[in-house]
Length: 484
Ligand code: DHB
Image 1 (tube, helix red, strand yellow):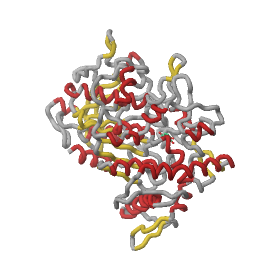
Image 2 (cartoon, protein in one colour):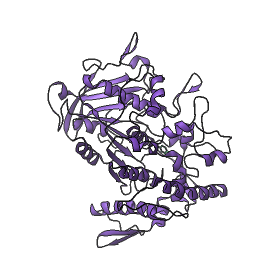
Image 3 (cartoon, helix red, strand yellow):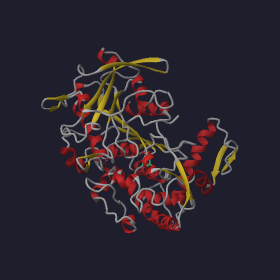
Image 4 (cartoon, helix red, strand yellow):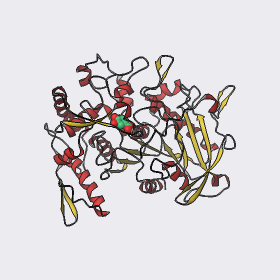
């Protein structure tokens, strides 16, 4: 049922709806340049206006990606309401289409690969305004220069938020109720958007592309399987998968969760095993430095072998996950790594569970010695296609690799910014059989946010692989709750 990516529509200059003789008109006009659309969602007809292919900055680098599509329920032009909302109160659903740190064009509501209405269509049926931003990504080139390397993706999303903030008075919906959504790399940048609102680090980049000079903070974050905290993801991966010496790997060009995945099997080489051991050993130092606290207020830590209360917490997420699905009536008797007593999962054999999940990536999973990963490609610059972003891989480079700019590495990691973020509401999901990154990575983000006093809804849904938007009823009831 997997097919071609949905976000690779080619946008050309003649399709841009806000181009004028003197540049791009950044003043939104509800009465112009829209098409009326209808769709059916759960048997209900949804009527909305589609404002598409709007360039959201004055000096775009790539008009195929620096555009936003905006969809507004028709009722809001007739003083009517949809569900809980009206033109004044409607939140803005802000889903990006980024996958694999590739370029992601502005999204179009429709039916997903499963034939069901996607998140944007469901959002419209629930009375949300939908604003789907495009953003540049790691493979873009123009005049012999790379134009979409980090931090382009986050700079573009911020510029799109600024467009909505600036046009709040001209548009139904509340720009102070923007809820970002994304999956995988898109989940990572959704979290990054929430973490970095109005932060000065991004200002020079925003200026350069002619972003509007207004705030770019959002209201809430939804992130599915965020491939985030990239500079610590190598060590987290080996902390979890060190014992697993065989792998089923996907091609780097197919990292993007949007596209069909083909797996090749293999066994770690001696070199890779040595690297895995080194990386695994490095993780506890990082984890302990965070001084994360569990629900009981006690520090979550790891000893030099990688054991301790943090590992117990990770195991607990999997146990909680199994219990949620067991309660719904799923038969879990086939899983011998579970101990079920009186209709409750009371234990999980962690090592067996990790072996059952299996390894998908070889060490380093995100920054590799040969600069072969999508993330190495993301951290390239205008003239260098791939770069390292960890000291260990720089030292062990087999490709004469150079290091990405420290400031840019910092700017791509929400962990460096969450303490200054005003965003209160976070919903983070990472499937219980997702091995694109270690569960430790989204867990660290979620726990850090909880420790900062945020309202965090974090879970690892049972038997769920690397994917997103699979629980739209729950997602929208969470959104309705947090905007109220
Ligand atoms: C995605 C998947 C990965 O495994 C990764 O390293 C980066 C991005 C993705 O599906 O977006």
